[in-house]
Image (tube, rainbow, N blue to C red; front, side, top):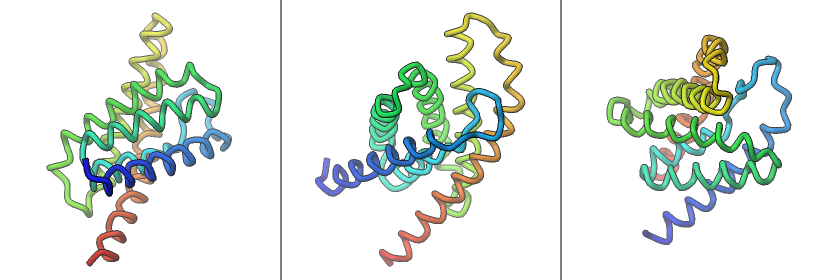
Length: 165
């Protein structure tokens, strides 16, 4: 692995961790567990688009593990990891289908996968499928937040290309 890539992964992990911690302090206007902005996912999408699947997975795992230790919510680590890893898998597989101007669409698919991963973890932990009643609201919120985080990542990626041109 190149020193440049390792340095960029470290910086992305730090930025993702900061966004994760800041977002944990923002009250969510919806009283449904699992609904949040997903600002740190901008970093994962950025890493996937500009580095590699492996780099994005490393950044994601480090961010989730460190972030949950920092905010002191270790139970949420299972939900964050299951959602985040499924999100990354879906985005990595679908990435070849999208251009740089469609990153927001890729992010929306990833956000839906993230919510499906979280719901699967919740069903596993709670031992009941009744938690799936939250699915429509979580999937709708995932589309909205996925669009927003995708637009953010897309803007940063396109701006980076202009700087390096």
